[in-house]
Image (cartoon, rainbow, N blue to C red; front, side, top):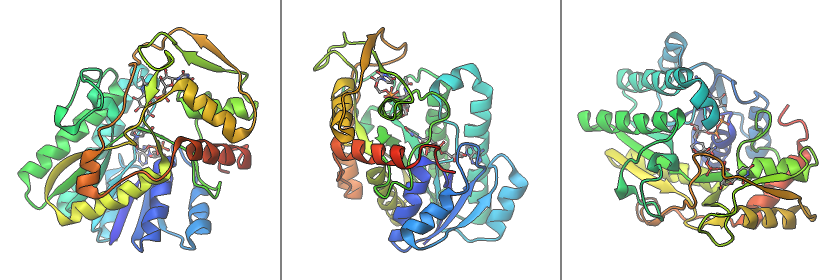
Length: 337
Ligand code: NAD
Ligand code: UD1
């Protein structure tokens, strides 16, 4: 299949491109390089032996986006392009709504105009908000989002569901990711956070490399195994494999389907820290701080639907996630350049 991957040079997009190429798909990447480096493409080629075609295009630029569709007949789209920093979205909400909603609408309009009927969209467990009991089930529906980033994910889910309801040829798989971490085991692809990381594992990686002094653990008085927050971490390569299955599901079915992608297991902040210590072979300092505003105690996925509809199960455990993250950190002290 010929598949357009928007945000294809980004963290999850690049790993997904590798898995799609491995399965023999014809992959076309599109990205405006706002949060990624063009050299990611060479690394994808190094891993797979194949250099995917790349368009340096902004999804907000409708003229150039249209040219991409005029030059290609896509069977399907995987739509990763978007901004993703929760804190930043609170400060500049209109920028987030413009990029993540107006940009996405441009893409959906191209689908309609050029008869591309299948899409997989990057949603997030954040759409459950803190309204529901764990494990989070797709049947709960949409919760109350707590920041504009989360709201852009929720709106995209609603827009794509309406699109599929109105056009019976359309198929949308809305993947709700839990916490993707880790890196490609070659050490060539991984997450390169901008500035001081907000997310747990990128922060721990910088403590392990000596760039940051200690981990700040946000709260140890939650009703969890050791009082620290519990999340469902998933290896980015497992998540990438889920996209290959999701795109195959999309072309074989019609309508909109929401599917969780997680491991179904929860790990506390301290459990992740200890797994990382094992991976890097040293003790990592930490201090307990106040809870981070907006955080919930526990979040993990009900994974039954992913298994039933996609046949998806995770392969990699938390140790492997930390080992691969650490290898990428050591091999790429300046990120991907
Ligand atoms: P990323 O920032 O590494 O990748 C996103 C890519 O999109 C970047 O390469 C960026 O340059 C590109 N981009 C942004 N705006 C664009 C635009 N207007 N036009 C073209 N390209 C544009 O992020 P990621 O971690 O790979 O996340 C991919 C998707 O998955 C995002 O939509 C994100 O919101 C979603 N998601 C991520 C996580 C996570 O923890 N990483 C969790 C849930 C959902
Ligand atoms: C966060 C976002 C979520 C987004 C996801 C992307 C918030 C409130 N939620 O989820 O919308 O989809 O990232 O991956 O920002 N922690 C520390 N110290 C740190 C960093 C984190 O103790 O330096 C703790 C947190 O309190 C939490 C856990 O580690 O208990 C995981 O945090 P994080 O990696 O930021 O992910 P989420 O909060 O689950």
